[in-house]
Length: 190
Image (cartoon, rainbow, N blue to C red; front, side, top):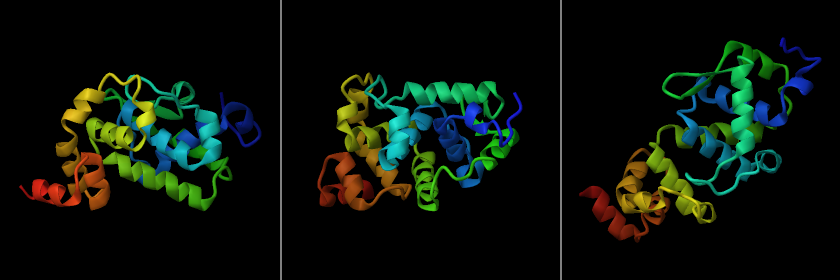
């Protein structure tokens, strides 16, 4: 189906536009798989109320999960607006960029900046580091997790890695590790 400014409202839901916006941010850097994509959308939905209404996140096997986001992503792939690569990364296509250009008024500049910031926050982390960040920051979504115990076993190591990547402050890294700042500093210097 050809997308024009006349039928974009019919073809692309606000959630689909959100996904395209996410994938276009930061020089069109792809989302690195389902965990990354879902957690990026989760962070966005926690910041932007209207996105939260569309996503409907709930506890799942790997923390917060939105069936609506997954379905919208699959729809975008079927329309050729997003490409799913063999390594399970998701990348916006040229037609996706063009479709997004037809509908640019969904988010304020502050909201677009937040989307870019959340993408940047997550993009340099491993799946385990992402899960640690989400599990500690939002423990209410861990009740169905199949990886919670494994993530907690490596939380200090992963917190140090997150801190060294410059993603979080010293205070947040110590919080993620579950230890005080002084102990965290001693461990991360070792």
